[in-house]
Image 1 (spheres, rainbow, N blue to C red):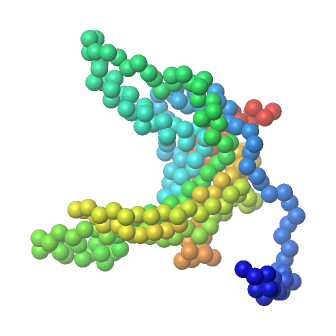
Image 2 (tube, rainbow, N blue to C red; image 1 turned 135 degrees about the vertical axis):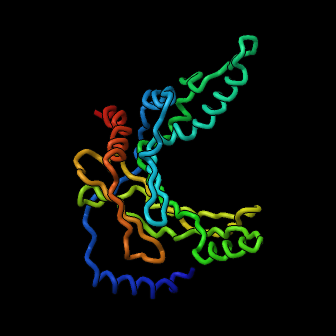
Image 3 (cartoon, rainbow, N blue to C red; image 1 turned 30 degrees about the vertical axis):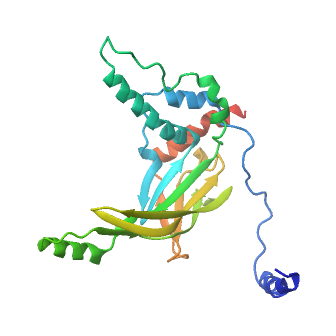
Length: 253
């Protein structure tokens, strides 16, 4: 772009600045430069059970996931754990060669890999797929006449932005990211060809803490950018998020 072409844009910005309240002078949060403690992740790997329920909930047309370093690693290692269980069942007889590795095998060599897990909280707000009311009615009518129709699934909304509140104070995100999502599936039962944006906001490790009292998440869609869908996080979810970051917070003392 030629520099002289920016003049109208700059003039417009200067005009708007004179009518707008100046932002508060404060330091913005940044990505942490240190890592989540390795031993804490090891404890999660070795645990027989892990309750994922506190990290997931639905609000309006969004599926929300709260991602901590512990939750993320356990979720990504779950497939390997299930595969090992299946193999162990198959080789359960005393004459079979037993599994020669475990999930925690050579854990000390994972340090570099686990270093990818920053001590941050990621809140993902994914628009859900669904069928329109009249689409479902049409399929039902067709089925009465023995005619099969695929369910036409589309994203119910498009993510615009989110706000996280610790008590009445809004928590500034490190990265307020929007991620492009695409669905393109066709089979006997469903067809789905649509695109949307999901929210993937990252927050500091102490964004949710004991002093908050009430933790609230507000979600905005592109259709209603000024109308928030409000969700107060339940006690169990808040306690789990706080507990997940305790090993990191203690390591900094």
